[in-house]
Amino acid sequence: MSQAVPAQRRRPPHPSGAPAGQVRFAHPSERLFAALLDLYDERWEYEPVEFPLRWDESGSPVSGFRPDFWLPERAVFIELTTAEQRLVTRKNGKVRRMRELYPEVPVLVVYQRDFLALLEAHGLGVHVPTAA
Image 1 (tube, one colour):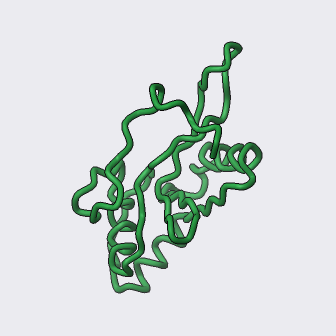
Image 2 (cartoon, one colour):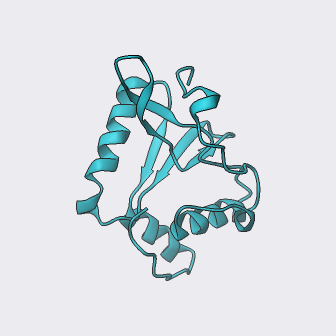
């Protein structure tokens, strides 16, 4: 993770370690996922770091990837995507590029079908809007 975007170029990080109800998420599915993590007392941080994926000629990052969750006790990033499978091509490309550039950084992708199965397993037959 040594090649993360310099602090002056990053957007401010979201609060980390706060219960799901105290964090401003980009998508409702992320709040649900964080609530499940809270339920199991799993420590998490929301979007704590952005990994540059492409740079311009001067070496400044022009494209990056910010995984949704960091689970510090498991040392893994989680990217949640609840978009329909046919719409996740761009995100899959970013994950693939990240894995090429940062092979030592584990990233798990949770797709819509897996997320819905997880909710169902917890008795939460909730409709989740697509697009995360």
